[in-house]
Each structure stands twice: as structure tokens, then as C-alpha cells.
Length: 226
Image (tube, rainbow, N blue to C red):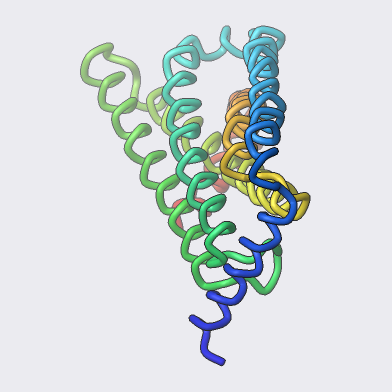
């Protein structure tokens, strides 16, 4: 049996299972309940701001952190939305299996695309922040490099934490008979903000913790770029 045949059979099986789990007459009710559950997680978005407020002492070391934080969290949200949307649809189509191991080529391509997008956006934001600080505000080059490093480290760490959580929630919701297209993105938009904020605070603390911390940050950035 060819790969296409396997995918088609898997897709039909998934659709049949979904049809059995959610009868047509109850589909509206099920969709409403799932939407309410997913959107209720948006209240957790307040936690991301609270975390930044609790660790606001890091802003005394880096006042520019307030400037780059919105761009980081917005870009991470865009990439997370792309990843969760494509993953949810692929689960419905059967091109991605609800499994962490031995998954399809489409799954590997999707993960690689997310890594590349994260790296490209990190380099673009870092380069833009660097040139703006040096050319417009006359910031010292070493401080501008710190801004570049903070962006790269935060985006790299968020990739390590946010993407696996997205995959896990997508697979879990699909296996439980829920609709990943409804569940995953609202939940991950909130969890992503919280995780990215924690990564951001950790990156700044590590960057300004001394020579060893700065060296660790630059080594991580070099590994991320390579």
C-alpha cells in the first residue's frame, strides 16, 4: 500500500470517528462548549503581564526591554498561530498522525518550517533593533548587541518550550474527540504569552548576571543560529 493510500485511509478513519463522536444534531452544542472552554483560557493572558510586573526589576538593567517585549510576543504569537493552525488542519486531513514519534513527513516539514520562521524573525527583529539603537539613539554598540542577544535567546527558548506544548495539546485534543481547530489556538495564545514572558525574563536575568551568564547567552545564540 502506498503512502497516499495510507494517508487517505487514515483520513477517512479520522473523519468517521469524528462523525461518531459528534452527531450532527449536537454539533452546535459541542462546538459551543469547546469554544467556551478554549476562550476561557484568555483570562490567563493577565498572568503574562503579571509575570513581567513581578520581575520588573530587570527593566532597571535594561530599559529597552519594554520596547522589544511587544515585538517579541507578537511575532511569537504569529508563528504560534501558523503552527497550531497548520497542525490542527493536518490532523483532520490525516497528513499528520496524533503521535509524537514516528510521524509523517508533513509533520517534520511543518516543524522545520516553524524553526526556520523563528530564526528568520529573530534575526530580523534583532538586526532592526540594533540599527535603530545605534543610528537613531546613539546607543553603544555593546549595549545594542545585548538587545540583539536578548531577542535571539528569548525566541530560541520559546521555540523549545512553546512548540512541544502546542504539539501535545493538539494531539491530546484530537485523541479526546475535540476539534483542534477550535481548541488549540486560543489555549496556546495564552500559554504562549506566559511561556514567552518567562523566557524573556530569564534571558534578561541571564544576560545581566555577569560574565558567565553573558557567555552562556551568546553560546546559546550561536547554537540557535547554526
